[in-house]
Length: 178
Image 1: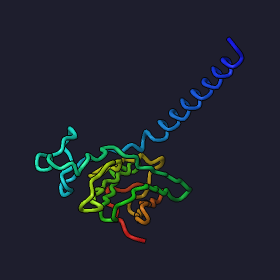
Image 2: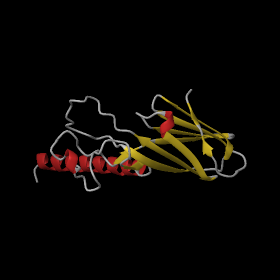
Image 3: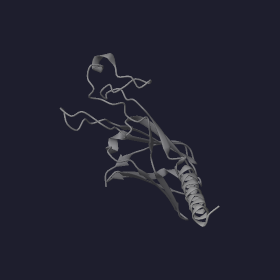
Image 4: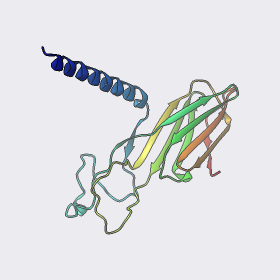
């Protein structure tokens, strides 16, 4: 093989290895963040489970089926006395969340991201955002005290602060503005 062919082969091998490594890292980091969204009851009918537009809107090409899966990035910070869970959830209101603890180590965030049509006369050409209801379960690395939990939502970020010591029975956590 010529020197140029060897260089091309080597460069292609390095590019492939780099791409493979990137996909492996993305898969490992995002595997827990992939969240399923189900169509909600009071949103406009966008599409049924098979992605077909309902008959009432079949004549209009105004709606594209939304994504049914989305990434909801979560960070969990642990210190000696508390845990801080940070979830990126843009485009929602504090009332759209319901936070529960079914055990001292399992935090469940349920929510609803509503579809807001930006312009009444618009036609969507691309829909990548997921809309509807979702449930995101987060396994915590240590048990927490549910009774002293606090949650806030600001600038598209839900922050849940949990104290560490002893575990108590399950209860809902109220979301407040800052």
